[in-house]
Image (cartoon, rainbow, N blue to C red):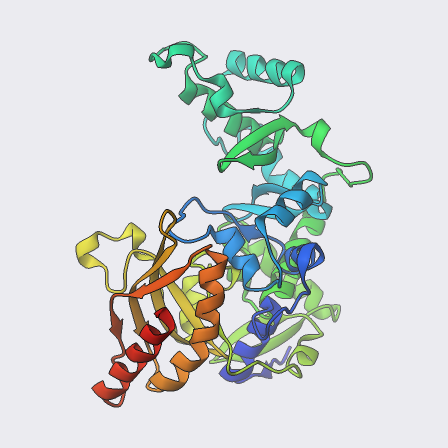
Length: 404
């Protein structure tokens, strides 16, 4: 079947519109905006790093006006959102619960063990939760803080809780201090939610449709990302859907992508060119690094896992999306006691330094408020493609004026 050619510019546009990053408030505001974003993207990744606001809050903040952690907590409490595993720890729409069952059943069946099983410990944990209600890992700590080799030792209990969580016996009803609070799944799933296990075909169709809905276009490898042994089955299902008119084929840079039929409609939407988005390293847009390099020419690596001496941009550099292109990255840290947002390195990758900084400023102010900060301190600014050192100095002065 012949594929329609698509330019790199249009491919980027299709991706950004699908991701809701083409304008402000693409999915609405408040609680409804949070839910609509999650339904569109299918998941939002959770991460433990907190040098600035955590990844899940950061990803929603970029897409939803009036976003707050309290609104998300309420949606979890009201059982519209649940926590499980996508390609990593994530929040997912409760309406999609049944599509988490394949992984849960594989782990419970022994195909993939998360932490291994201790049957005695498992039964004791389940009995305590049945009797006492939702519990955290710390509720299983040994009194007095002494080390122990028995089942009540914290580490074995935590592993058992996570094993039960991954198998689907337990769910997280909320987080306290970023620690999960576990309850029996039967107490968490709301009435009316489909809990039947999807057929293999249903599951693959779900993965394909959700990936293309969220990303605009994708290869079979990208759809199967980090799911072992399913690439060929995804490819077969894509071909079937293509023949049925449920998908279309697009060619960009000599590579073929699948897309949904409504892709052309999305290309009619406009990207706000003066808008800068400060993205989380774990934003849905950025998860597949090779894809970002191929489509956007943006070579990105999070350097918190790189030895300090080998870091080029900084410990936690945040990608800066300017209209339809990446224009730099910003290594930032919020000092919560003082309210100081420390920009340790602002690296600008466009020669249009002055114009970029002008568009960055309003977003930077909002980012400061989002992180509950009061002041900004810029330590280093680099712009290797700037036409002159004078433009870099002028850019620094503009930011320092913002600081004052």
